[in-house]
Image (tube, rainbow, N blue to C red; front, side, top):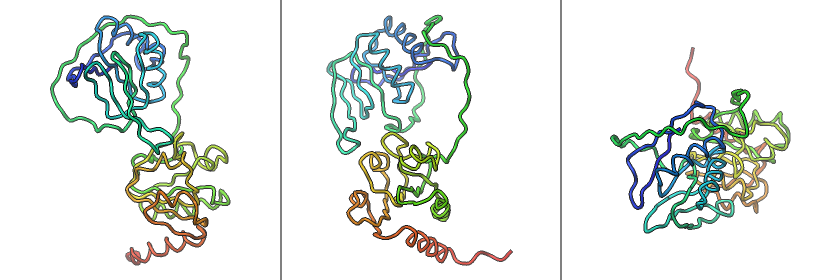
Length: 280
């Protein structure tokens, strides 16, 4: 396990490598105990973890063990003058709140908040935390097969909403995504409620957060939970029959119309721009 440390007001250029049995099968409870043992002797001011599924659970367990405060899902983190200050999104991403807590503290940092550093140098310290026995044991591990595209890497996303009447109509939107060199995503009802698309395609507060260059929302009303997952897209295009749909408030371009008429027209226009296919 590897954790980064911050000293007050200074970004530490060192890494702490915790050594002990377990390999890649360390569960959150065991991870929290391992970091607790290291922190008890090394006394860092701040411990940062990624705001992943395991990271959030590890952070909460660790903060409880240490008796420290815990800030969750934060970004723009600074630590100075005896205080940790950060920002976090609230109200489904509609508001950015400034938060602060006294040091020492634990915090989970929202994934994607910072770009990977290319800085070289620094040092690596090692600490042997010994064997850690948790109340839960991992009996087996099965890799989940990817059921859809990696939307976080997609340059263009065409997202389907409840305006799509039947599962059999999804190829129409898949075709538009393919014509634009992008991937197909969806709102929560199509994945979680209807099961038309895998969970990996669900974009929103409880799904995937994306930042494509172009986001095309087709038949999506645009509730706050969905907007939170795509609000940082560079260009947003909305297609909806309801001119008062909230999605238009978050869009750069809007088309009020039936997707079953608009999408074929868009595909025809894209095909015309590309011109005829070259002769074999």
